[in-house]
Length: 160
Image 1 (cartoon, rainbow, N blue to C red):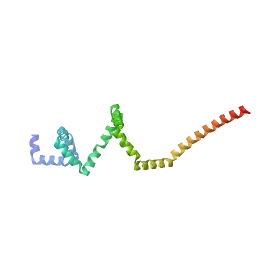
Image 2 (cartoon, rainbow, N blue to C red):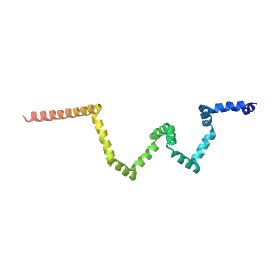
Image 3 (cartoon, rainbow, N blue to C red):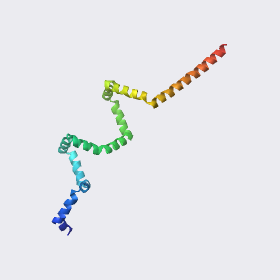
Image 4 (cartoon, one colour):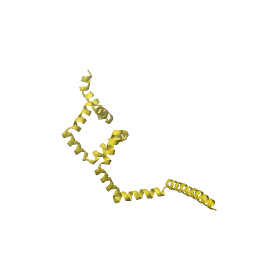
């Protein structure tokens, strides 16, 4: 009986109205296991790889795709950073002579040096940084004064 209702013109019209709503379409499409399987198969197949490579050439699609994945990627990277095995892999990569060479080239570069100078200038202008430097200099001055007082008065009174 329900099938007969759905096959009627009124039933088809009702289904059409329901499917025209964006939220309903998303629910129906995203809840399907077949969609999940299709996407997985597409990603793994050679034809699928070519399809995705072509799709990623479209800047609008690539941006939308990247934005949709950003929060999950961030979560995954944060989790990986806590993983000792991943940390060791990163250390191994950084120890690779080619990676060391590339890093040194970047650090020696004009742009990097310019950036470091900008950072240092900004830090030197920071009130917090100035206060910290002043605090350190005050401690050094106090230590120098106490050394001179203990060294100068101890040596002078013993000799006179």
